[in-house]
Image 1 (cartoon, helix red, strand yellow):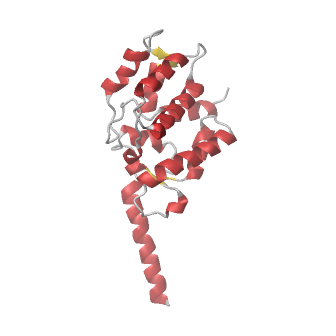
Image 2 (cartoon, one colour; image 1 turned 30 degrees about the horizontal axis):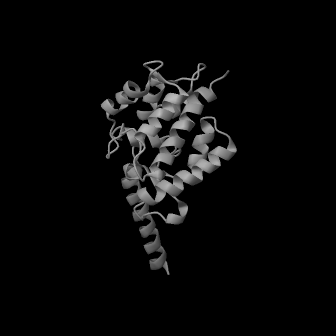
Image 3 (cartoon, one colour; image 1 turned 120 degrees about the horizontal axis):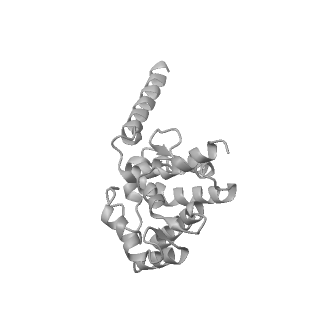
Length: 204
């Protein structure tokens, strides 16, 4: 009996060590895409669970309904693509280290297939679609960009891209209804969500 208990403890320790090796990251060698999603890894163990995504959405100002729905949809889409089988699928984990596997089509291309930032593609967003202001997008210009990026037979990717950008626009558009280039850049370097959370926590 004692041997069996010891074996179970040893197995558990090995599993925890493996998960930490795969997921845990101090942020210094993370790709920009990993930094982007790590905001939702609230305990910084390299694995994002639905509860953490919900908490992350609430932290940046979304209501209960949208935060709950977003958590379900995001984990339903990304968990099967990023989980390598070390965590039960029923827990719907997202492994930060594997987030590049969850990239969808019909996007801007500002992240490459490894999760690295592509400055040229980022600049193209505004060069091609910012007609009113060279450093910002209006709502109509955002719709134009989304339509231009839509790939044939990629409904899932297009819906994902549209949802991401429309949520971003509603969250951080300025008083003139513009999505500023500098703000979008913060999305891609992973710092926007931390900035929004800090602003909400600061005394008014």
